[in-house]
Length: 81
Image (cartoon, rainbow, N blue to C red; front, side, top):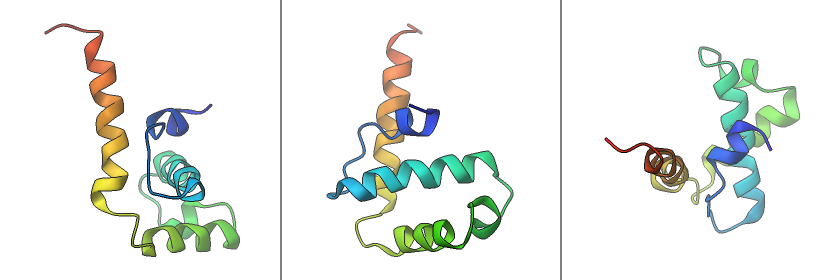
């Protein structure tokens, strides 16, 4: 499991394919933060899959950010402040 899959482990976009896709998109864009979507993705099919993901009504700010928040809170639990 890569870092993006771990980060998105609690993703629930209502479709397992979208849950997998959000981790793939995060991995690609995270590896190339200054790049455009086509430059970050590996080929035309992956680029179109990313655009379809962002166009999906289930891929909202909240549904994409919630798993990241969950992972952040989990990491914080180990370190008292």
